[in-house]
Length: 445
Image (tube, rainbow, N blue to C red; front, side, top):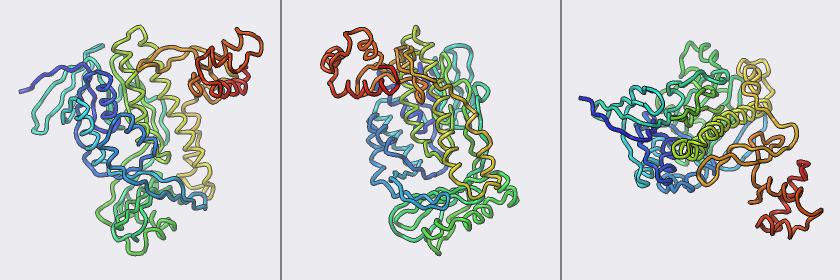
């Protein structure tokens, strides 16, 4: 027997993106329903300080309690080894469980579920078919759906852009040299590696390879991983001579991709279901949290302020496109620094026009224009400064409204004093001075 329920907002997935959005919506007074199930396989992931700040902003105390002290980061790239700012390391199943608990404490409706099918019967007419933990069948009718089930989520439209596919091979080890908790990155002829070493001597090493490298080993993932490990001198020295595999090698496909249909009248795609960055950038978790913080005002505007719905859709789609392009270009620039194997298939493929996949129009000169922005938890059109390097526009610097400052300079007395401008804009003179210098640099003052 199939039971039917109704929810105004259904979030599909139980990862960081869906749970962060659910918490943000609940704090805004909305009642989302999360339909998802725990991550089936363990995985280790690095988190930046910005992710921790996002968790703090959302009040995710259980998730924050997992972070502890940051780990040392070491990179061996282009023949140079450097130590960088630390990062937090978490086990993803534990993090997802902690965020689930934070969502529960925030009052979010949580339903462990395996989503089997999603139907869209016109605007506001979603039907989600799912199973509970006992295999019972259910249907939830929803007016708004957020698709947040990762890269494998069914498409809503054709992809806007996709980079060359690669494969990631990950294997756990024991018996590593004990010492300071460390994450490491190392490049080699056939790809690059990212790994972790904890204080007890447990380690994980993920290799990112061209698919042809795996084919050259007859599809044997253990053999391909072992061959890659022999090409990692820094990793070998760090982990020591007594390393022993702890289980087989896990394999997955990876690809930087921008999905189509990121924002509909009654639906959003979020996290990896919207776009996936190159894994080298390490931005996956940050994009999950920051994307959720951008999705919340978008969704609220679509539901509560239909007059601003077009601005909301523009805001969300433009953000996805521009962030994807920025991450892609940043990764490509980093890859370009590794020049030791220019003819290796992996490195050749990375230089094959990836930056042109998603061209983002850059303003040639600064100008004032109306663009969608976040204001008081909603998306509205406001005047911003479009400038080279800022295609989405800049509205405030140190709390100073830049278009308003521009107006004050043009419409007031010649050469107004800083005190006059500060009084007119209700901002401290020092902040106004900094904003004025920025406008002068853009040749708008």
